[in-house]
Image (cartoon, rainbow, N blue to C red; front, side):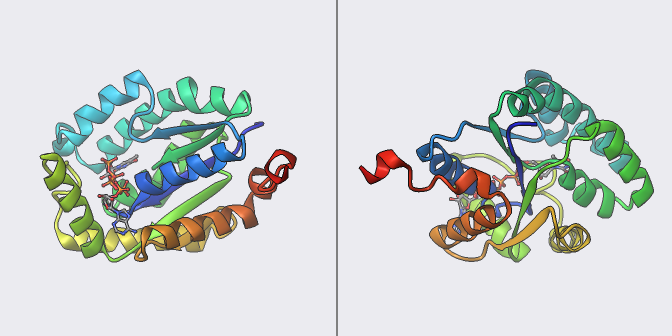
Length: 224
Ligand code: T5A
């Protein structure tokens, strides 16, 4: 694929959306074509599935059925949004992807790892992120940030934010295990820093792992 595929992962309120916006702005200043998208969602049908799952309507079906629904949304998102963008040379910045299913439904839902591996294989059809940035911070801090943002916007907690603190603490460990298992793809970023420091750490990871996206930092026009 001509574009690079970068996914952002982490617990609730880790700062993914905020940092995706910052990275998009940086890349656009380098004249790099960028598409921002999210999961669950990112295509019209997948957004419908998002509303259903985050509204809590699939919870009673159990974690495996929820994993299947996230996978169904992901198939449409890949077909309609991600793959066409990558093929056209646009870089894709995606707020959550398959690692969220691995962490939330797989690890926390106690789904057999082999089953999650097979589901991921048939869902992704060979499309893998070039880089996954895992924003890591204590669960209490992430939840407090998410809660404060919801209070500002007058929104309520969604299906997963409502889970108890031990769920979110285990989630953090699940992400760190994913990073440990796939160090070539994953970079853990300390998200318990101020916004600019997190942005700097993300940019450093990109410069190291995907220099083709960042090496035009000083273009002839900028110098002139
Ligand atoms: N899910 C998803 C699954 O269970 N399985 C799956 O396969 C998939 C794909 C999605 C939910 O679905 C689950 C996981 C999720 O529970 P969502 O609404 O998309 O739900 O939720 P999140 O992805 O968790 O999004 P959040 O908005 O909660 O978190 P973000 O995007 O990580 O955080 P962000 O950037 O919105 O920041 C939150 C607040 O903190 C502030 C921001 O200004 C904002 O107010 N903030 C900081 N404050 C201080 N210092 C910093 N460094 C800060 N960074 C951000």
